[in-house]
Image (tube, rainbow, N blue to C red; front, side, top):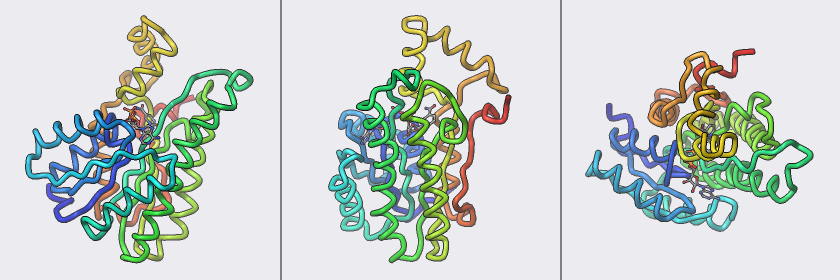
Length: 260
Ligand code: NAD
């Protein structure tokens, strides 16, 4: 497929996991990529992996912290200056944070998680939407989580931030549909990326692989999701095929969030 021929797409958290998997998928379909991350080595690894599969891809790497509005302005400006437009924006950088009961969840940790997962997403939308409104087209996919539509436990900062991402998606989707811009959120369950590995290590320590087996035993599909499965979904949502999907939140979790 060539859904991303001539398309310019920004991906935050592009140096790992879901950002990298999505970048790879849309690069294979012709996208010009702006990969944003705080992790410079991760960005380089993503670039090398993409070029090994799609050698003609134009890739711009931007080291930036999504909690810093100036950094956010920088990655938007670089994109517009170099490529003249923003077709798609995968607003995805995020962290899980240290798991704890609410009473033991520190204020510092709460603020750190919310600052990356919620403020970072808001800054990105604020500056990308200005460009998209003016150009009259564009698609944004925000990364929420099952933790943004259900209670998961031990994740006050994560839950607050991801529910906030869902709220931002619905609010701005309603505002910007009239300008030809669509905004959606994905709500992944447990997808095997470095973030989930870290989460299982918090639960199971050295026995994290055992903890992983127990974790997926309650999933209807009895397995973790794969990063590339999220990549396929986000590629569709960023493409023109999904232009009429707006202000919507799409779970990708093997059905876990519907089980009780
Ligand atoms: P990951 O740790 O593999 O990748 C996250 C990337 O974000 C990293 O490269 C990291 O350096 C970058 N990042 C972190 N803080 C940043 C900052 N302040 N500025 C810029 N970049 C920053 O994790 P992942 O699993 O790919 O997670 C991607 C997104 O998906 C996150 O928002 C996460 O909450 C969400 N998510 C993941 C899962 C899952 O199971 N993997 C489930 C639900 C939601």
